[in-house]
Length: 197
Length: 273
Ligand SMILES: C[S@@+](CC[C@H](N)C(=O)[O-])C[C@H]1O[C@@H](n2cnc3c(N)ncnc32)[C@H](O)[C@@H]1O
View 1: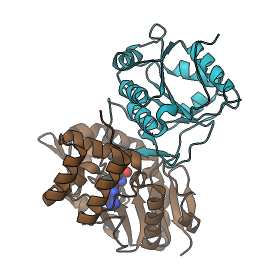
View 2: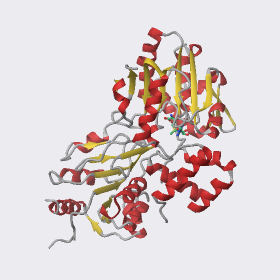
View 3: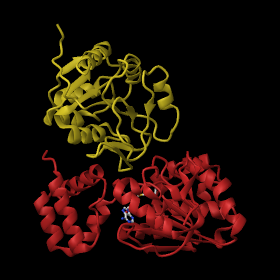
């Protein structure tokens, strides 16, 4: 029996992470089912003034190469996207990305709350939000937007997190559907994938 | 929190257009929505309260525009871009013109135009170049004219300048006064500041180089396309256009009148009228 009740109505997955999330993201991307049909949109805290290296590091083991989208780039099915350094990443109603240099939020640019919030606005209940390890509260509001609009919420199990502030903040603010270890998140993607076959 | 819906955003942009002749109707939805939300939170208003304020208090519009627009900027933002300017683009222009004109479209608080002035000064050609710096937001342009920035911003600016590998130290160009970095006003002697709306304004001059970085990201694709047309018209043939490092022209109709000169730094050249 599966521990998840899933279906094929989801249109996107959004992932937020900060300190201690890199290994988890690498593992998830490395074990992603081949041909996984949904776009995966990631906002991870990163050095503001280092433009290069991060997607290369993430892509090394990833099944799908990770892309830092340009402004207004279309969102492709199965694409894996990362918010570029020093920009906030949002999605637009016309199914494309947009970037912004707005003020930092929660001391961050990219801010996880902005990416999660705009995904929730556009994808509503067709969105899965995942929040991983991290040392601040960025992402908690975003997870609440996702839940309030009917999306599915997952956090990395605080017991497994290098720094558990971020998932705990989200758990305190809103309903989290699943608290999972990275290996279980990998299983989740495999389960979900089956519903689209 | 109550989310602002699309209908509310349309009512706001429609009112501003009808009453004040600024056109935000084709701005990118996601950032426009957050900016409106921010004003509502800041002023402790509701959507209807904001509409009423805009309708009843014409003096509110400049403040509203100042809050609505995103003015975040840095000196020597993307240092590698500025190295390409110094080592490739400006020398290429100089081959054909000893005197030329540069337009900073969306100059915000002036850090970008000041960076250009320093670059040109270090090349020894500051007096041969006419700089135009324009923005929609008149409040922020007043700050640009003062060329005075909080000292706390200078750490980042210095770091960028070092990566740009400038000729001296950034501190050669400013004095510290009361917690502010006050830049040498001579740098701005050749800068014409003017209010210019990229959406409703018409081309006002011809340029050898236009910088419009991190401005069109706030527009939707329809508007990007229209504004690119105006830039095309405002450039001499073989003039250059620089956009932000994560922007792209490829989805614009006019893209085929340009060639890519530097893909990493997003520098284009007009090759067809
Ligand atoms: C983020 S700043 C860019 C500053 C600088 N170019 C940089 O890259 O750091 C964007 C600027 O574009 C201006 N802007 C937005 N819409 C505009 C319009 N329709 N016409 C002219 N300027 C506009 C804003 O007022 C703001 O100062």
